[in-house]
Amino acid sequence: MKLDGKCCIITGAGDGIGRGIALAFADEGAAVAICDINSEALEATHGLVEKTGAKTFSKAIDIRDVNAITAFVRDAAHALGGVDVLVNNAAVMPGSRLEILTEETIDHVLAVNLKAPILFTRQVFPEMKKSGGGSIIHMSSVTGHNGFPEVAIYGATKGGLMALARGHAMELAPHNIRVNSVSPGTVDSPMLHRFVEENADDPALALREFDQIHPRGTIASIREIANVCVFLASDDSANITATDIRCDGGYCVQGVQPK
Image 1 (cartoon, rainbow, N blue to C red):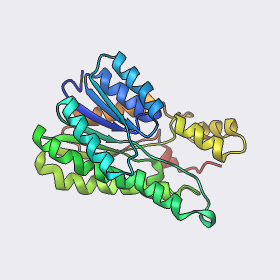
Image 2 (image 1 turned 90 degrees about the horizontal axis):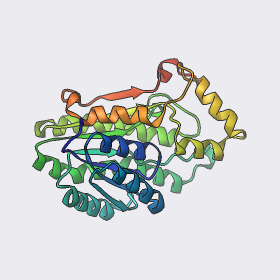
Image 3 (image 1 turned 180 degrees about the vertical axis):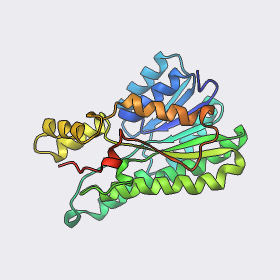
Image 4 (image 1 turned 90 degrees about the vertical axis):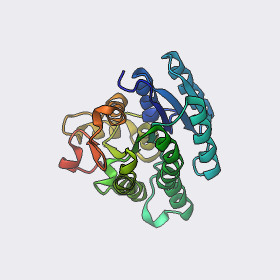
């Protein structure tokens, strides 16, 4: 029970990695507050977390709305008894060639992937100070390390999260608040399956190629990423801050581009 007694917020927990993190945290004894824009998916995650016996709070919000973020953090802290851990997981990853990239798409990606984590961090800071410290985890990506065609804006936000973690880690260290980022490679998640359905001529072939370009021959499972977040949220990582943990199966070192 590595997270026994900790109150944790996870954004984008309707499915995929966010849901996996919520369940992993609950399994380790945490009280869990979750949000997502998809109310039906969020309700499903809420039910799964409740089955573990964990104390749970959920609310469907659009994290592009600063007032919604403020209200959610306030209500989550009240429901759980504080905030000890924040996982900024919510993200969007639309693919677009530069010549047809719209301003609307740029603003959407920046608002969800980068601005919202800044606002969530600002809102949990007073709660973590009251608790005597905390851990903030930004879900970054190998796209923030390596360049990828047609998802450059997404990659820019993920690189921005790594820089954000380093800067806030230095600023918040006197308050015993650690800030880190996690950079998965390709993960067998609903986001990946949606991405290949929208962008690949042969989605099944695309998924096989993603496996092949990872040195161990397979992409990551959701639980493998969630386990890294459990570590960073727990006291086992008390001396780790301002760090990005690449859990990419060695992909960044190899650096092969998907076709």
